[in-house]
Length: 254
Ligand code: OOG
Ligand code: MG
Image (cartoon, rainbow, N blue to C red; front, top):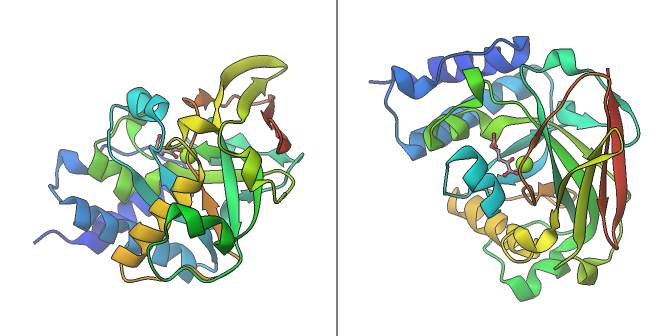
C-alpha cells in the first residue's frame, strides 16, 4: 500500500526548504483521488505548524495555462495565510525554488458555500473581486509534472498578491489583463480566457468543494486561475498586473 502521509511529507518538505524533488509519480503510482488526499495531508502539516487556511485556488482554468504545462484538467488547491504577500510590497525569492508569476483575479466570499452554485447566483455569494497575481513554484525539478503530481503538490501554490477590492463584478467578463516586469509587457490577455468568465471559477470551486464534502466559510479567497501563461520571476524585479476596470496590483522581488 502506498503511504500517502509519507508522500505528503516529501512534497511538504520540498516546499518548506525550497529543495526540488523528483516527480512523485516516478516511483509511486497513485490515482487522482489519492493525489488530493496527499494534498490534504500536506496542508494539514502546514496547519499543524500554525498556518491558517484562507481560501482555495483553481488551476488550469485557461487554455494558455493548459498548453504551457501540458495538462488539460481543471485542478484546485488550498491557500494559507503564509502565502499572502502585501500589495506594493517586497517578496523574497529565496524561499522559492524556481518561482513564476501569473495574472489572475481573486474573489472574496461573503456567504458560506456548501453546495454547487449556478453562474447566475455566484455573484450573490461574493463580497468583492480584485486584480491579483499568483506566484507558483512547482516543487518538482524543471517545473515538470503529471496531473497527479501537481495536485499532490497543492497545485504549485506558493504566494499571492491581491490588489484593491471592488464590487465591479459586471466589468469582469472580458477585461483586458496586462502583466509587466520592469515596465515591459510580458503577458497580455483578457479575463475571458478564464473559463469564458472568471465567475465560472466560483461555480467550479463550489462544485469541487461540495464534491469533497467540504464547505468554504464566508470570508474566503478564491483565486480564479491565470488568464495567461506564467512568467519566470527573477530577483530584483518590479512586477505589475493591470486588470481593466478593476485596478492594479504590484510587488518587487529581492
Ligand atoms: C499549476 C498551477 C496552475 C493556474 O492559475 O492555472 C495555476 C502550475 O502551473 O504549476 O495556478
Ligand atoms: Mg494560478
